[in-house]
Length: 318
Image (cartoon, rainbow, N blue to C red; front, side):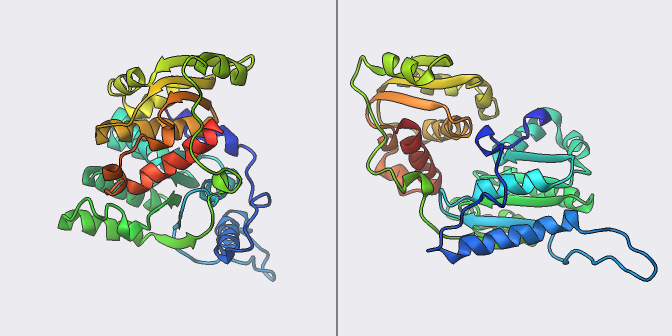
């Protein structure tokens, strides 16, 4: 499973030099410079002569945390930082790290990741206090082993879980974890929507297969009824969703309809994240895919997750 802890293929060539800050939002340029400073801790010389002492890397916290909205380049910066880090290094979403603990066990996961120069964690959005406590303990042990941590989220670390959990133990864990991070806020427009307006594209019934085949070209594509996909996701752990889309170029979904269950909606969000990471195009009929989350869901504690998925679905169906 550790072999999958790499940046998504769309970020294989991400560097700090090819990140383009939006001049209308100075915080993007500030975040870029902060990441350069964080990366200098690896490139700074470690020795020097008797009469010429090497400069030390600037002291700072062992973690950096990028907080911002959707599509402002957080994952690009995280992947660029990963590319600069010496091996061993790991990059994964929050759910992939918790799945690793579930598959290997806590102690085995610590042994596997200990000694890494960087643990990069994308989409640090917590859904239950148990995961929070496990990850807080894991990060604490990895920092003690000398690893540095970089994370992204749509929520700053002292607000993770806000509106969902109020237990004192949970809040104590959150503040303990936040103390490891220098937090940077990145403002800006969602780059996926700068040139895309409206809804996720829906095609007429009966045209999904032809369009999916066209988009896939010589690659693999699938055709399924949306309700069948949702039912299947319930039988597969979200950490395995990445295997569902291996080698796919396009996915066809027929008879899309609004989701009635928040559990189903969260599973679908996890699938959308994997589709987006792999840049698998989506063709769908029925309800536009960015409208499958009801008003009650968008008003709840998982609002930011749903909005991120909507943004990605607009991009994948355009």
